[in-house]
Length: 215
Image 1 (spheres, rainbow, N blue to C red):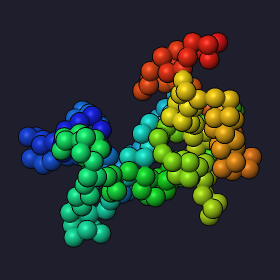
Image 2: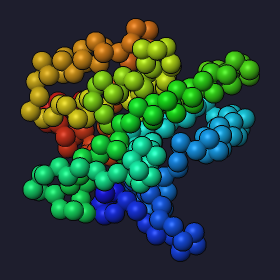
Image 3: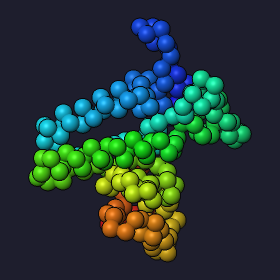
């Protein structure tokens, strides 16, 4: 099921094949298990870095890599049903994204991008070019965007959406303290913290909080 409702598969008359789009039909998913695709992405990053960009904000990273058909008899496996009665078959939530979200291979791609950025910084000098990651995930999976226990390094700053997802107009000061300390507790030593209070995917702060909470 697509994030934007309906089937995540679309028939292409030109290619005579179906293609996967986890979001809009105009946004075909890249196969980051393909070395040629990964190399093309490095070339794209280099093109923009050579143009002088300061870095990249990478969107929807939990959906970067899907299950490998080779591990499932040559086919993409069906997601298990959630069993939640409020969702119909065309709606997000009807299935559990076991094979299409938060796969560990997605982080491997991110670590490779960080290696590429670091090598570019080393070669060209100047201000540090950075990677920002956007992805709604639990705290454990989100921290993997910083890096893993094997020493691989990920994005410089994974966006922290806890003040969007975990607090509301009903929250009190204790909730805000807990939300702040949770990130600082899980964050790797020496990493950079951040807190997002709003974005284009959610209602504005005055709508989500009481007016007396918004300065």
